[in-house]
Length: 504
Picture 1 (cartoon, rainbow, N blue to C red):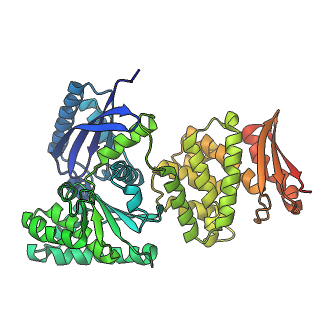
Picture 2 (picture 1 turned 180 degrees about the vertical axis):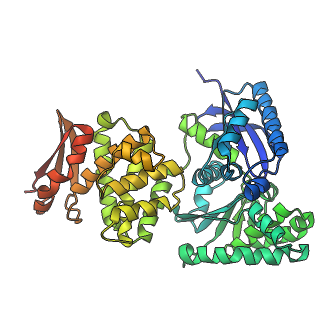
Picture 3 (picture 1 turned 60 degrees about the horizontal axis):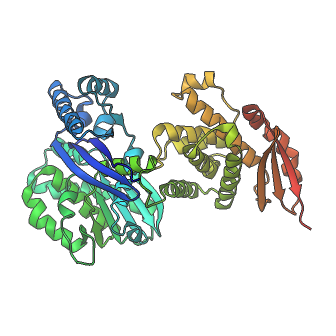
C-alpha cells in the first residue's frame, strides 16, 4: 500500500527576504514544490551595522512569520524546519530575538552556522539534478552569495577540493559603498576593486593551476532571472556562457539599477573573470530546497543523489594536505579507527554522524605538526577550530578539534573542561568515546609505517581482540600497546588484546 505523501514546509529567515516553500514528499525520488511565498524584508542592514533589530523591524518580522504559520496550518503540513542565516546569526541579542519569535508566532527558528548554511545551499544544487554530477567532473566553483558573505566551493573530478568563506556579501558591500559615498557612475569600478583582490588570493592559494570551466551560482538576487534563460536546447535552463551573461547584465540587470542585483551580478562577473570560467549555471534553487532535501533524506523519505559525507571527508583530506599531513598514514588510521568503531557499536552506542567525526579526526590528527613538533595536540586543535569544514556546525567542529587534541595530550575531564568551553555532557561523552578509539588506532601504528595489511576486530567476552596480519617486526607496537590503550580501557571497561597472525 502506497504511503500518503508528506507535506513539509521550509522557512528561510534571510538577510534580504523571508521565504517559505511547501513540498509534497511522496517517497523514493518523488518530491515536488507546491507553493512558494516570499516577502522582502531588510534584516541585513540593521543586523550588520547595528547588531540589533529595531522595534518596527521586529514587529514586521513577527507579522510575516505569523502569516507563514497561518499558511502552514491551512495546508495542514506534517512538519517544518525554520532557519535563520547570517542576519540572525550576527545579531548581538540572537537568543532574545528567537525567544520573541517563538512567543509571538509559535515558530521555533534554528540558527545555522555559516558552514551548515552553505552545506544546505550545496545540497539544494545537488537536488536540482540537471547533470550536476557531470558538471562537477570538470573544474567547478559553487559561488554562494549571501547578505554577509560569499562561499566559494571548489570541485575537481567530482571531488570537493576546498570551501572558503569571504566577507563579500551583498549587504556588506552595499554598506561599504554607502560609507565611502560612492556615486552611481562609480559603483561598478569600485565593486571590482573591492572584490577582485580577495578573489585573486583565493585563486592563488586554492585554484592554482586548475582550469575552472563552470561557476554554479546560488543567490536570492539574480538566479531567479538567470534560471529562465536557455542558451542551447541541449543545456539545462540557466546554463549560460560568460558572454551571454555579460550581455544580460548590460541589457537587463544594469538597467534595473537596484543595488542588490547589481552587486550580485558584479560578484558573478568578477568571479568568472578572475577564475577564467567560461560558463555559469544558475539552477534557481534556494536554501529552502536544501532544507527540504536534507529533511527528506535524513527521514528516509527519498534517496540521496550524491554522497555528501564523502565531500566532508574529502575536504578534511585537503586540509591535511595543506598542512603537509601524511596521506598514507591518514588513510591507514581512518581505516583502523572505523574498523574499531564498527566492531564496538554495542559499547559506544554512537551513530553515523559520530562515525563521520571519527573519520575527520583520524584524517586531521597530526595536522598541528606543520606548526610545532612539540605541541601537536594544541596546534592541531587551533587549526581545526579555525578552518571551516563544510557541513559541520561550530559545535561539531569543536568536538572534532578536541578529539584531535586529546589524541596527543592528557585527557581533560568534564568538570575542568566545562569551565573553559561550552561543551555539554553529551558532547563530552562523544569526545571521550571517539578519542579512546582514535588512540587505540594510533597504537596500532606507533612506528608510522603502516605495518598491518589487514586488521580484524572482534569483541569477545570482556576483551577487544585485534588480529593483525603482517610478517613485519611489530616489537615497537607491542611494547607501547599496553600504555597507549589505558584510556580505551577506562572509557569502555574492555581490554584490547593484540594478536599477530604471521604469514607462512
